Image 1: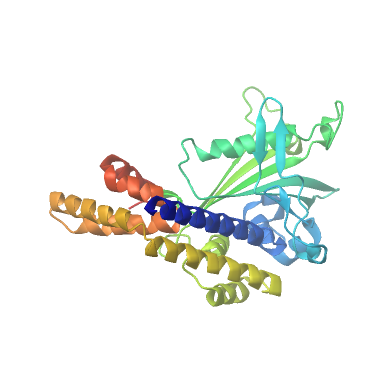
Image 2: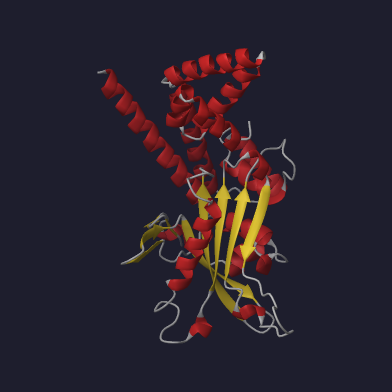
Length: 337
């Protein structure tokens, strides 16, 4: 009976976390949120106002994680996505979180770019995350054959962006934005190619932090507030409206409400069903660590780690860390504790 109850609780929390993740994706697919991301991180949009980007340069109805999430009457405020599933016989299937088209105004023409936005909770999935971003960008490049161009018309190739929003980065990466792109290096001679001909793929890593961390502000604050587990709906709405001029439509308010309710449910479930055993074991290990070092810091560290793991939905890691001191140290490093 206990096993059945634990299984049911695990399924329920997994379903709630999936619902929370889906709500985050729906919020991020709002054109005004994407407009702030583009203006802050994408050089082609840096001198444009967010409202202008949302109204004129982002195309509208999205496919998010492979399925349509808007009804016909909601078309105007969300993006039109290209297919979020990309597959080949040899390379398997990629399911993008959010994928859409935008146009950029150039001096002599307008040109389209293909955008991919991913939300990433685990900064250390077992490989350098930026490599996955490059792979996603590469697939967005290669998948344009017979969709954006045919035969040898490579002049029609569209530039691609893969933008990664990292919710739980390690301490040394918090509140940072890094850009990875193709550059020309002149090895012999002074010949230069037009930038437009090779500047075709860019990966951007957005690592969120907290108000206590350096560089907290702008797009980093906007996204942290929007996706935060701790900030309530009213405070989120106030900050988004007063500091970023984002009008809280009925639809956006409903999504924020839904996300906050799911977040609260996840937290309460984890604390009530509280993974009590793991918390108790973690406290014991923390006390042992503190005794070994002659300080109470061990208890504080373990408590801090457990709270972060619960909020991230990583309860299995919390229980494992209570048993495995080496793994606990890895998690301390990951979360900058």
